Length: 569
Image (cartoon, rainbow, N blue to C red; front, side, top):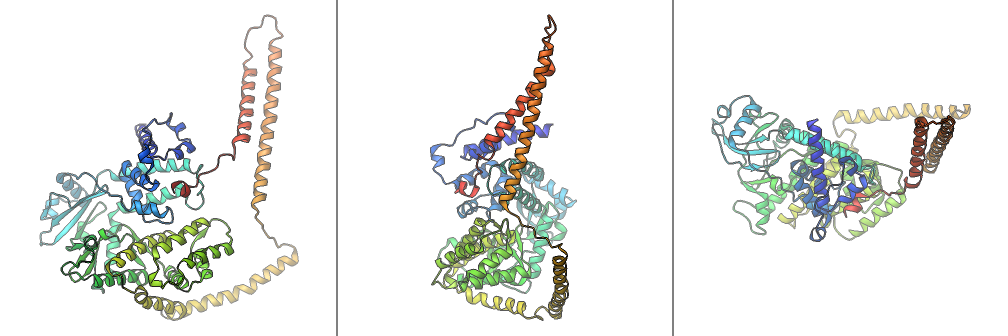
């Protein structure tokens, strides 16, 4: 009961903030006020606030709602397939900061997480935090053997808070699904479920530890990439201890403009970043999902130090091949191949007009006509292709969406560091290797040839049997073809609705006749003053049935759904 009251209060707080930032129309259409008891009479948005872009107001809304919504914004900033480009740009500005916890509480949390007192595990822990975010707090520390480390400690009660807020988000999402258009590509409940899963994974530092170990293994033979050492014995679900990488934040290097900082060569740094990115994508299949300048530390010798492995992406061999073929198709201005690949890797929500789809892709590619591939802004191109997929209701897998955001971020950094770097020349060896492995049956070892032969043998064996089955069905009159027609489905629905309305009308008419019959009988007795209760109940029920039928007939289908992407724009 107490939790329900707290959830209702929190729901009213969320609603008031949403209204104050100018997004109250969605709540009005979702009829959320009927659940809250009355409409929240919060502060209406001022004219100055409404002059801000929708993207900026959305960011400010999430920031005001607290840590759970701030993290939601940060996760959505890596999903250009869900939100328009201007929203993605705004959400990257979200700052995840919180009031620091006292060091005594940090000691208690370390002991609770690792099972031993903090002073028994660390020789020294700085009292001032290195960073203080809504999820965790980071402190510099030193081990007994002199190793300098950083300790990330999860805030107490944060998991319960996130679970409670996501429960409310799920509740709101169920309401919004009745009034927004994009149900079937990205439903509100689907987004909340995905966000909740991502948050719970991020709260488990064991998952981040596994990511760090995987990155360290993949980059072991690449001296220009440094992954911090994980101290497994000093890490748990709520505490993680890593080697401290001492260097210059990439953000500071970029802010220096054309000036080279001591010990840092911008061209070498750009080449290292490009090599590391291509290795992650096309060799490892495991890439850093959020390579913004704050997550990269430049070490001596222009080496790259990567930190924060909460968000990573994984690509299968098939995904890697699709990316290479997509890049080649774009470079050759081949809209047919681009259309086929987008349709293949995505999940269409409905049958699409492939001819029109190819024509739209051709129009996008014509924009880059005459440009070399190295001159094309891949971030803008990917956003255009993702928007086109959304237009045709093709759901893009999460991995490709995260990759498009990471690729755009990396390309922007490289262009700032070395505008003259030829990306195509660096990428060519990786493309050749992947294509060679794809079309060489023995490319992946002796198993490659056997796998191809096995698939061919299965095809040759199954095809005659399947054709024979079809011919036998035709001969015996058992061959059936199922045709789906949306107009027939609508007609079937309308007939069902008509039947329900007729049934309700017959019941209501019978109730009225029966009610008046009871009234007439009650009035036959002389001096009868009692109320004919059954008759009144019958009349009330008939009135309710008629009212419901009329309301359904007049209102149903007249309220159009809102397209969130158009509304936000």
